[in-house]
Structures are given as structure tokens and as C-alpha cells.
Length: 364
Ligand SMILES: NC(=O)c1ccc[n+]([C@@H]2O[C@H](COP(=O)([O-])OP(=O)(O)OC[C@H]3O[C@@H](n4cnc5c(N)ncnc54)[C@H](O)[C@@H]3O)[C@@H](O)[C@H]2O)c1
Ligand SMILES: [Zn+2]
Image 1 (cartoon, rainbow, N blue to C red):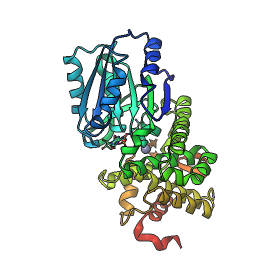
Image 2 (spheres, rainbow, N blue to C red; image 1 turned 180 degrees about the vertical axis):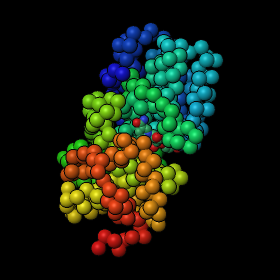
Image 3 (cartoon, protein in one colour; image 1 turned 90 degrees about the horizontal axis):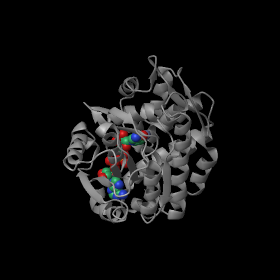
Image 4 (cartoon, helix red, strand yellow; image 1 turned 180 degrees about the horizontal axis):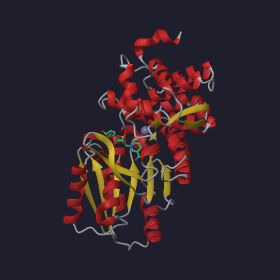
């Protein structure tokens, strides 16, 4: 898998045609090839027309295919409907796809692009904070299958990731908060200075100040990009990106996917911080500061009334296991994560209890 890809950050779609012309030239794609925008039922009415207008100066034809919004549609059936549309219009390897939406559209479009005619090029135009800082980067594509998240997939890198931060203005608040879960996770695992920057720019972030949001997206994306470039197939360092995800995924499953992913991740990060604190890696102040920051960004800090033992059991079915042991990501300090495989059940339980709203007394 090659690693080079282009990444643009801005606050409109103006530069899209010019950058795409360069991409086509570099890829040896003939001018006048076609592009199919894949959007969902929320992003299509908001942004498809603008994007289509920009793309029409570069491509001979610009199609639009819309999929109903929601994780429940991240399925092989949706991908099949994309294939059918492409076949009907005689798309071939000289044409491309553009994902216009959040992680659901990005993952599905990427998977369709990875597999249609054994792989065609695609670009990402992420429109959720989570997609801009996380899911559009790294080339993981796929769909859910048989009740299992991301069970079927492929690695396929986009030729361009074009971030228009202005699209976040229409994003529901709780979706923005969910994206902040991944931003915070990224800062905590890799960059203490960035974590401090997030704390000092809290007002700007909460107030959607573009002068703060854009550098925040750029920084978070660059951290993920750097990690993924060094470890594209997740043999080592990339696993650190799963900070908060072992317990986070367990909560997500326990809640039957009714709680947004980034919110579950925030709870998982707080639980991991608690375990890190108990091992003497973090101070009491650092632990409680992490929790306060989550609260300030609209993230949950308690999952009221969860069944601790059920959550513990669910952590065992997480994919990130190594030889039957959980590879748990701990914070050795703020900005430095490490994977450890000796985290005991009682430590996991203590982390889970810390985020269980029923157990508030436990902190004292
Ligand atoms: N490939 C990866 O590496 C990776 C990493 C993390 C997450 N993911 C995947 O990403 C998915 C979650 O992505 P998500 O959180 O972006 O969810 P999503 O794509 O479902 O988007 C959330 C909601 O926001 C709407 N929306 C999107 N952009 C909007 C905008 N600008 N204005 C108004 N509404 C808008 C969508 O229609 C949807 O209803 C999951 O399926 C997860 O598995 C993939
Ligand atoms: Zn995540």
C-alpha cells in the first residue's frame, strides 16, 4: 500500500478543482474522466450542488449517488447499490469516486472504490469533525456485517482528502462533541503541547471559532497521519490510536450503538486514565483534569448505571486482542501512550467503575 496522499485544509470548496487537476495529472488519469459523488441523505442536500459545480470544471461528467444517512446503512447492500449505479453508467478504472459525508460515507465509498473493478481511485471530502480528524485518514475502509462493526473491509488510500471546515457549521452539536472525543484522545496519546493548546483554546473550540477549529483539525489529522505513515498496517505504533477504544467499544456495544462513537471513546479514555493513575503514571490532578476537559467539550463523563461485569466481558470480545490478551492502551504520561498486555480484570473493573454513574462514591 502506498502512503502518499494529498491533504488540504480550508474553509470553502474553492481550491478543490485546482488541486484535483494536479491529482489527475499525477495519477496519469486522463482529463475528462468521470467522478461519482457518494453522499448521504443529509450531506447531499447541503453540499452536493456546490461540490458538483466545482468538479464540473475538471471532470467530463459528475454524477451523484445518495445513500440514506446512518450507521445502519453501512452495509454490503449499500455498497452493492453503488456498484450497480457504476456498472449502469459504465464507470471504469479511469473514473473515480468522491465521498461527501462523515465516516459512514467515507468508509463505504472507500470500500466500493477498493473493490469495484479491483480498485478505482477515490477522494475524501469529510464533513463531520470525526471524519476530518480521524476516519478519512489512514486508508481503512469497510462496512458492518452481521451485527459486527467494520467486519468486512480493505485498505485503500484516497488520492486526496479535502477538508472544508465550514461544513461543520451545519453539523449537529452532539456530532461535533463526538468528534472532540477523538481529538482529545489523539492529543492525550501523542502530544502534550497540543493537549495544553486544547485547554487554552477551549472557548474558541466551543464557540466554533474558525481560527481555532481549523488549526485543531490540521494538528489532529497530522498526528494520525504521522502515526499511520510509520505503521500503515497496524503492526505496531498504530495500535496507540485505540486509546479509550477497548472500554469505549464495549460501552458502544452495551448501549446497542445508541451512544455516538466519540462519546464512548471519551468514557473509555477516562477509564484508561483511571487505570493509568492507579499504576502511578498520572497524578490525581491530571486524571480529574482529563475528566473536566471531556465535560467541557460536551462529552459524557459517566455512563449511568452500566453493568460493570457486562462491560468487562464485552472488552474481551474487542478485536484488539493479542494471543487472547487485551492489548490495553495506557497513558504513561500526558501525551505519551503505550500498549500493555498485563492489565488485569480488577484494574479494568476499577476503570469501568470510575465511569459508572452509580459509583460516584467510589472516587472518594
Ligand atoms: N476508517 C476509519 O479509520 C474510521 C475511524 C473512525 C471511525 N470510522 C467510522 O466512521 C463512522 C462514524 O463516522 P461519523 O461520526 O462521521 O458518522 P456519520 O457518517 O454517520 O455522520 C454523522 C451524522 O452527521 C450527518 N452529517 C455529516 N456531515 C454533516 C454536516 N456537515 N452537516 C450536517 N449533518 C452532517 C450524517 O448524515 C449523519 O447523520 C463509523 O461507521 C465508524 O466505524 C472509521
Ligand atoms: Zn474511534
